[in-house]
Length: 324
Image (cartoon, rainbow, N blue to C red):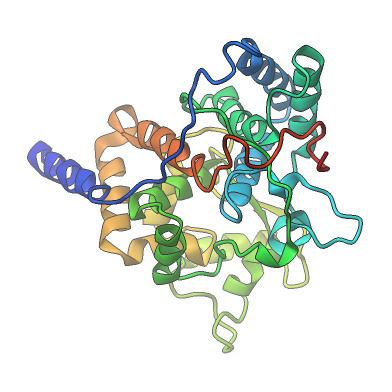
């Protein structure tokens, strides 16, 4: 592609995020400077120690943060445990969420150093950032000062579905105050994502009730998936970015562009001009000049500001799984 065409795409891409009211908050990157100056270092050290030997935790922790923020806001309500199984973590989309032990370990280390100071909501936000950085992904400044929510309801876990089309996905994001650009950029986290045959099989077996696979999928990709996922298999894992699932890069966008997106929601990104332009632009720029890492960092900051509790709202939990 000629350089002038690439530049034109970049200009159009920049327009996608204009004229949108981003979530606002009173968060501050230096929030703990006086009461717990080593807070971010403590969280980073714990995260690197646990994610380093188990890189798949990076995607898990990133997903946990997203699932938390997208329901009641970034208030750590997903972390709350309910003996009656009626909290957010008990909702079907959250049953496969993992990585709680990393958040708990970071919180325990903070409680030892600075008791009753750092919220679980901030811990989770930092852990998500540090987990991505630990596997070579981007790093970004995390504004801090969130407080923890006291409410967690299973029936409120209305998260974007892997079977959603582009119109539904755009509404999911814009209803939260995020942009269409945030949608495609944050979807790029699937570059380190892992799913299971249970979510894949509905697309490759009898998608429309006639025994065929989803026509939006490349036939060779369907054949590969059928080799891995038998009709009765719901537990075998499947990489969302085959070949580079442990590398945070633009490989996911390349897969989507080749009709090899694992979910309906992945393929849906080609059905909208804004999301499609972002994907084609990143691929045209190439890995060296791609803006994906920068864009991802900016979208993660916006995600981390959704519905936050500050000031005297909420609390600082002693343990992340229970209210004080």
